[in-house]
Length: 116
Image (cartoon, rainbow, N blue to C red; front, side, top):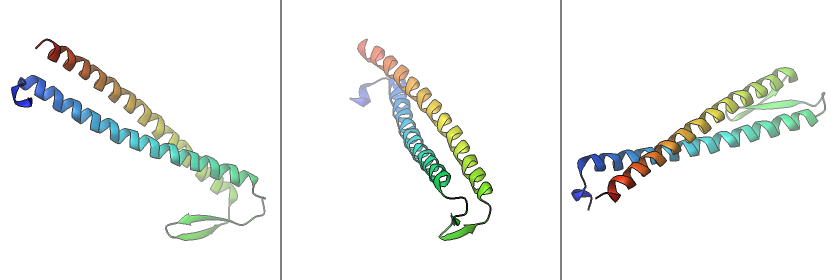
C-alpha cells in the first residue's frame, strides 16, 4: 500500500517515524538523567547525615579515593546535581517539542489520508 501513496505522504510518514525515534531516544535520556539526579540527591542526603569527622571516599574510575575536604565534596556533588538538573529540564523541553511535532504531523497525515 505504501507504493500507492503520493511521494509527499510517504515523505511525511518517514518524517513521522524519524520524529518518533528521536522522541524515544530523548525519553531514554530523560529517564537516565532523572535517575542520576535522584542518586545525587540521595548521596547529598546521606552525606548530611554522616558525622563531620567520618572518613569519606569518592569513586574515581574503579578506585575509591579518600576525600580530605568534606566541603569540596559537598560542592562538587551539588554542582553535579545542578548540572544534571539543567540537562534534565532541557531534555523535558526537547521531549515536549518532539511530542508536539509528532502530534501535528499525525494530524496532517490523518487529514491527508482521510481525504483520499
